[in-house]
Amino acid sequence: MSDEPLVVVEGLRKVYRSGPKEVVALREVSFVVRPGELVAVRGRSGSGKTTLLNQIGGLDRPDAGRVLVSGQDVTSMSEDALLELRRDVVGFVFQSFGLIPVLSAAENVGVPMRLARMPVEEREARVRMLLALVGLEQHANQRPFELSGGQRQRVAIARSLANRPRLLVADEPTGQLDSQTGRQIMELLRALVRSEGVTALVATHDPSLITLADRVLEISDGVVHEADLAAPAG
Image (cartoon, rainbow, N blue to C red):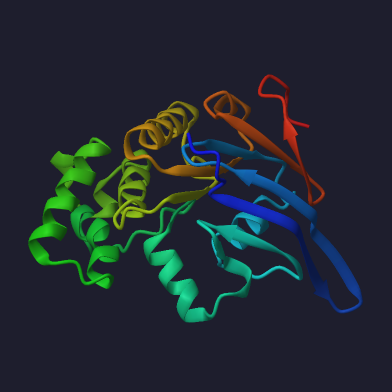
């Protein structure tokens, strides 16, 4: 594992305003994530997990502080540069799967590669490889409504790996799944971190999944600290 951090978060602050009311979602958050780590971000609903991941992935901008991903300052990037970052460096997995209903599993996985203008033969070969990697090679031609929740999330994970990202950001990826399927998905993410050489940040409030992480970041009222893997959620 490299000593150089893949993700550097420095003094991150985010405030949401609704009229005169202010809600501080992140309070001077700082930490690093090194290559090859699977880091769980643990916290109650509304604690700031999604806000934090959105800053790191370039989906939102902080009010103060900065985020470096693979040496690039995400917080000062132009919109075009952020699109490139999300296409080439950061892969996303969401609770809602985010699959395109009219496309097959294989076509959904291939979408990011089409956007990156990958040659057809190379794209089709990588789609087959990724579906095999997540155990869905026999379901390539099925559409999302023909798949179980766990299978849909596996398709979403395969799609997130399409363009060989260095960082995988997963926001409650097991939130819509039963506990057994959720654990299988978390175990798959851990295996992919090892086999594909990616780094993963996974937000979850499920205590049964925390033990699968290398490190745990606890977030409460916008404050983040390193947590004991054995400690219960606070």
